[in-house]
Length: 297
Image (cartoon, rainbow, N blue to C red; front, side):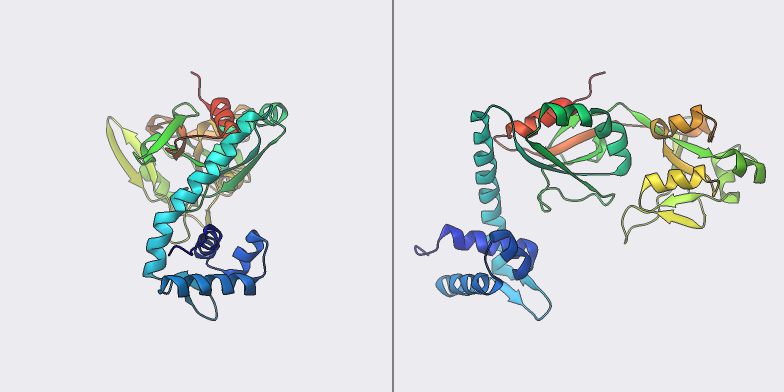
């Protein structure tokens, strides 16, 4: 074990995370064959197989999983500390990766984006649109955005938006074909545009509340998307009713392209929060982003 080099452990970690010699080699700037030789030499020195290889993929063995869990946080912390050294520079710099949804970008990110990029020209922001509750630690994102009540207790959460509600909306053309529903239960007679957050998940059941009683309605229709923006566009096109964030649909209500129904039945949800692992040292770039996004009522 004394002969085990840090670079060899980094090489193992890269392959284990990407589950591909080709991808890991590209990131490390070496050839796949050289990387494979490094891993085999590491396994020989440790006397145990770390990776299970097939013709199609590569994955950690039980020993490899254990090693990855123990060393990955250490290397991640080293990366954070090195990045934090940029405090010695005049301006924060680096790349920040965030997992979020379309509407979160529109409502929370887009309003501050142009000014932030102008003030911090050395910072690159990378947004990954995902409705599947991505594990930001496992996928190596710097942060994610969720509603406050959906965030794990071991994460730091910073509110970046006000409380909000969903709105049931349809176009004038749609309501010419079908009368507006008077209660959520009448939605079963309507064409509704739905959203499925994950490929293997269920279609979102529309949530309502009246007199303190919460309930859901299964709204059927011919269209299902995994992006709220496409749900909204379908409603604008007169395809059916949509259940979308009120603030997102406000311009369409103002100019008459859409009409809201069932407003008294739509509950209020806790505002969006930026969440991230509790690290000892946040980079200056990340701290600048948190400060820019922070909600001020």
